[in-house]
Image (cartoon, rainbow, N blue to C red; front, side):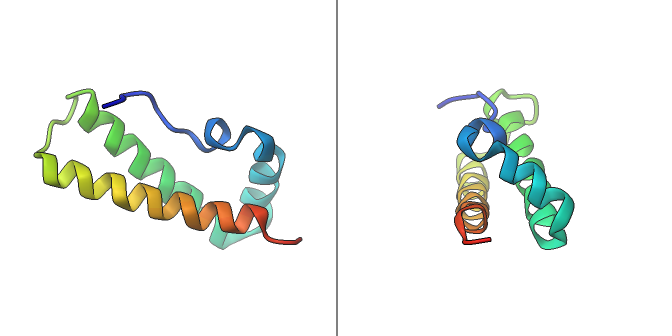
Length: 80
């Protein structure tokens, strides 16, 4: 179990400029990025026992984070 944050710019370093651009130009992308950030922080807090939770709840958070990440990646790699 890793307790290293998975920030979008770290997950997709080759797409960092696109992430920044979409955050400012696409309200839906900005909302997804913010949701991902909040979900990622919740996972990190659970993994580092700052806010412990049961294994099932932590697993569900990770699944939701992965789904958001997939959706974000699709938007990042879609033709402009």
